[in-house]
Image 1 (cartoon, rainbow, N blue to C red):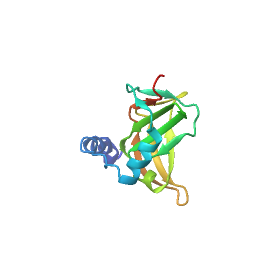
Image 2 (tube, rainbow, N blue to C red; image 1 turned 45 degrees about the vertical axis):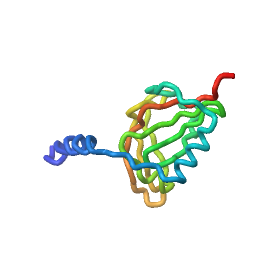
Image 3 (cartoon, rainbow, N blue to C red; image 1 turned 180 degrees about the vertical axis):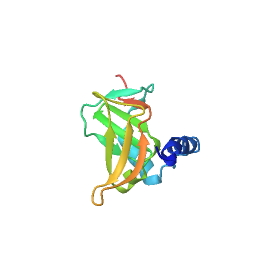
Image 4 (tube, one colour; image 1 turned 90 degrees about the vertical axis):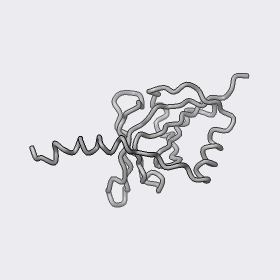
Length: 133
């Protein structure tokens, strides 16, 4: 095995401790506030069901929203940064089973060039629900 392959995990671990997410811009904050308007945050959970599968909304390279329906939206603060997501690159999530879970590897890719533009992992999911009446 080549020496650099042995050292790569150590280099990644060293970088992980220094990661600081980028603050949301005014436009990103407004988009998130609009999507979560009238909903109340709940306790974080590690996993959510993947149905429906296509309802991720990218707020930034660090923040995603997953809309289940009008009354339930999950907010996910990514671990690491998939900076390409904020530019409109495609999100690729590698999952095992029928759920999205904290730690599932996510990459962003420019489909025109085939280049990966970021790598991160899903964080905890914070549910935002319509208040009980």
